[in-house]
Picture 1 (cartoon, rainbow, N blue to C red):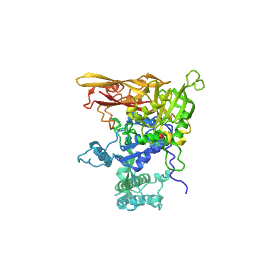
Picture 2: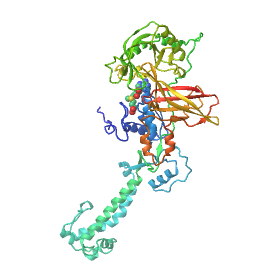
Picture 3: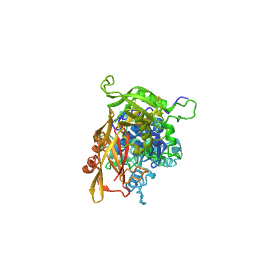
Picture 4: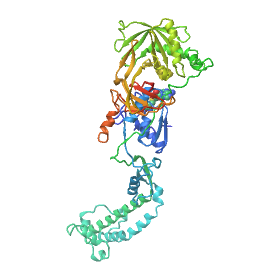
Length: 563
Ligand SMILES: C[S@@+](CC[C@H](N)C(=O)[O-])C[C@H]1O[C@@H](n2cnc3c(N)ncnc32)[C@H](O)[C@@H]1O
């Protein structure tokens, strides 16, 4: 069958209101159509592969709740900024006083005055159109009544015209225009007498100049006037009796109101889960995987996870927190350790000089591969670092999807530098990973945090920047690298609850919002969101504060501080 529902009107690319921020971004209009087709306000929309967050953005606009998921932190970072940075239209809620008034105005009835609760479930007030079908015309008895009421006026006029002109015009034969001779043909007064409309025709004709009921011209004009009036009344009756159709994509909008995203949370795979312990306190699950014994699955085609990671590590190197810095391998070969599975010769490369690595020294790196499904704990790092030191390595590179929160503070053991390289989940998608284009292994340093005593039992937290690993050295970078940082001012070791949020980074994703909201916002409050030193807050009774810092690449690191 030919495809007949091809949506060729929605594919227009990025626009000013829908700028392209992600390489595989979907056009908002497509998602909007799907959401409007399939859901009502208040429904829950799930997009398990959200990318730049188009679904969440459209759902937020149309009053749908949403949950959205991605494996890529870059995607989540983009989605978060997009949803938060947008300004949304305010649609009139059916369940509100102004909605009742609008509904009354649209349907020409007295507005309802039942109590309103602003429940979005009740929908918006929509524009609507009559839906006229043959059935609604055939079943409309009022049309006959209207017809009859006009017939008594039209029929004598027709007869008078025919009598004057000596014609036998049926209703459908009466021409729209008369010839001059026909128009000027006089009508005998007794034919006009008693016709109820002659006076009104004369008035309309603006004096005697263009004729009157005493010529055919006047009768003809009167006939057409009645004929058109009859049609209008029939049309109005059809429209009034027909069903109406709501235009669900055209709610009435209150342009004087501003709306921003409602509150939402971003949950990332828990970096602080409790590791599985064996009887002798070893981490059986994790160690098994750390040693590379764990396989991707029982399927015949399953690849050796460790081999795949090493292969990609060799090809793409390790991206450090600055976009320009990268560690590259000149060799990488298996190493028969208990924790360490490979040894590599590694050098620091900066953007643009990948061909001229000559002056950066080559260092001997030990490689620890974390579990395919799980987290590297501090104990794993310590054990691997000890092994690396004993074997005289300069550097330990631990590559894992996730690190325990407490592992993040572990960056060296004696002279040995420990680098925690997060594996981008894209590595689970072989097609993507094989291009070698993405930042598959990223090192993101530790936040440099200070706690200030603000008196009265209050403290504040300051993030001075992120300590980053550059050529094996720890270098402090400033707050411009921080896209966003959060504080859980009373961390319970289980879930990170964002109680403070700050956006100090160099590129301000909320600039556009700030511009559109400039009349509405409190400039001082806005400015306070850009800080690197938090507002004071009471010291938590359990003495634990957690700080989560996210950079522009979407990498996040969390640090727990005792206060
Ligand atoms: C085509 S993009 C989605 C684009 C999105 N509709 C938008 O407008 O930006 C597909 C997304 O799925 C994500 N993805 C791939 N495999 C995934 C998985 N197993 N679970 C969750 N997300 C995944 C990718 O990271 C990518 O961002």
